[in-house]
Image: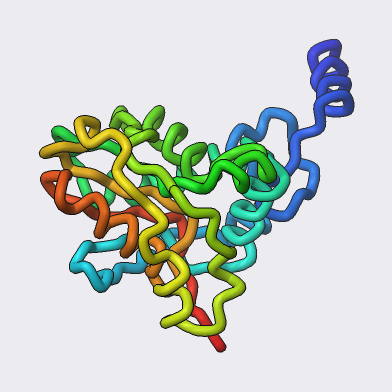
Amino acid sequence: MKKKTKMLLISYLYPNRCACCGEYINYDNDDYICETCEETFEPNIRRRTLDCGVKCAAYTEYGDAVRGAILSLKFEHYLPAAELLAKKMSFLYNYLYPDGLENAVFVPVPISKRRRRKRGCNQSEKIAKELSRLTGVPVAKNAIVKIKDNPAQSLAADVNARRKNVKDVYRIADAAAIRGKHAIVVDDVVTTGSTLNEVCRVLLPYAGSVECLTAASAELKY
C-alpha cells in the first residue's frame, strides 16, 4: 500500500505524458505512448530511392501519432519523444540489418545555428543519439553542417521550390568521421526527399556508402 501511495505521489509531482498526444499516462510507462496512439503507430515500412540514388527507409507513414511525437520534440523540446521515435526506428534498423552493420555511423540532418537557438535542439540529432544507444552505432554529429539559414521547407510552393530551397545549404565539416564508412542519415520525416537528397549529395564523395532512415514518410499535397 505504501509503495502504491508513493507511486501516485511521484505521478502527481512528475507527470508522465504521451509523446504523441500529450495525454497523461502511468509514471512507469517508459515507452512514453498511450494505448490509443500505440495502435496507430505500428510499423508500416516505406521505401524509396532519392534522386541521387540513395535508398531511404521509413518506419511508418506520416499519421497523427508520429506527427504528434515529431512536433512535441521539434517545438516543445519534449525529449521522451526522441526516445519513442528512436525505439521505433531501431525496429526498422534491426529489420533491415538483423546481423548489424560494421563500420557504420549515424549522421543526423543538421539545422542552422539560428534555428537551433530558437528550438532548443536539433530533433534529428536527439533521435540519432537515442538510436545510437539502442543499436551501438556511433553518431557523427559534426560530419556535416548547415551553412545557410534557408526558409522552412513547409513554406515552399512546390517540389521544385523545395529542391531550390536546400540547394548548397550543407557542407562537409569533418570528412574523417565518415570517410570510407557506411553513413546512415537520420531524420524525423521524409516528404519530397529534397532535404535528404541534398545531404546525401554532399556526403557521397566522402562516405563509402550512404542511405537514410526516418521515422515517417509523408505524401506532399499541393
